[in-house]
Image (spheres, rainbow, N blue to C red):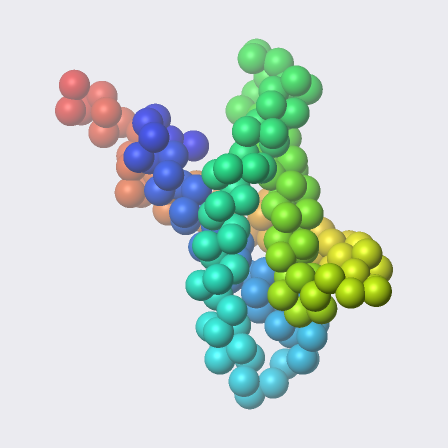
Length: 157
């Protein structure tokens, strides 16, 4: 989303921040439960996870996800279909990348790496897909259109 590179970057940052916050809470609660240190534990890992997520989104996942989505969606298809396909492939790509990051950060590259990675990715897709499609995607689009109204370009022209 966004009509230029600046707006696209703002949209990407908003989406990444909300997804990283949501998934961080989910993963910390999976690992430690609902404890009194939940917010502290999330805050500790938030910045590194956000940096990795932004890098993965911009450099690795975005082009591939959009490429796959636009192979399956026609130009004449409704916008909601395009959004859902892009969101689906973005979530799948980001889950693979961020599960790798989480597995390496918490378990290292040891004997059980593949088992930990597949387990982490499986648990993450369960939360990430609904989080993106039901909460974060719509919320980000709502906030983004308040910051950058569609008709502002028409008014300023």
